[in-house]
Length: 316
Ligand SMILES: [Zn+2]
Ligand SMILES: [Zn+2]
Ligand SMILES: [Zn+2]
Ligand SMILES: [Zn+2]
Image 1: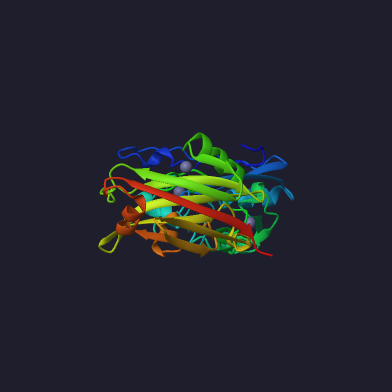
Image 2: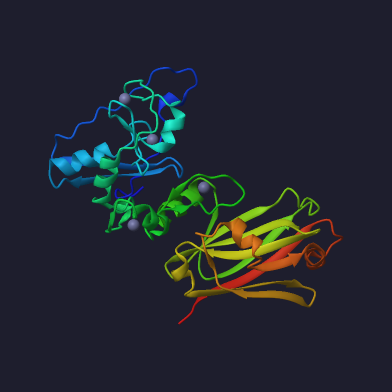
């Protein structure tokens, strides 16, 4: 993993354990000049730790005050407080059964308007700062940017498993090769044979992935089997390991055939920001109906044997 890529898993604190009556509350300190602002998001399981020189003691303290003591995420309105002034995010209020995690008093519905106002005046770095995003955003609009930030990590493009790996492209290429044992190829043309001994088993969908390195970029060639309405089909399509605006600079073609027949597809690779499921559901690729696939395979419908050829090129 490159040094500038720091990935932290957001871990649920122990208080979530049923029957656990006590919890530890982080001690808030803000005496140092260099402060570490930990930005995490329990939903996406990604957190980026940003260390920046504080513009003075008050700013660092405010950053820390804005962290919910339970989930450690930054708090957004309504920010709640107990009668003793301890703050908590709205999401965590339900989790702690309406008891202040710091003093155990009942929480009620008191909002901490002062802290909400202070937050409004703050600017924070994008949470993908460590991945290269240089932007600063007002506290309340930061999330909107982060959802579309081009520096945000990609999900693992491997299909057919719930892989939770996220990262930049070099990280994911290494992950596909080492963890998923995906075939890697150099070059912009392909000539692939897909063989399956029992082609009746479309329900146990087949996913195959090959990664191509060409034009200094990485492309995922997918081959999948699934039911399209009542008909079992095979589908081949290409995804680009990068953002959509770059994917549009490339085109690809796919061909499959035998016995003097040929099916071909000419398309634009989809970004891996679009899941393989989404691409599949939009039928954005070469679709081969099973009867045709078995015809191309020759033999007596006992074996699937398809030869898919194709090419990637750059549009000028
Ligand atoms: Zn919280
Ligand atoms: Zn309290
Ligand atoms: Zn950003
Ligand atoms: Zn993976």
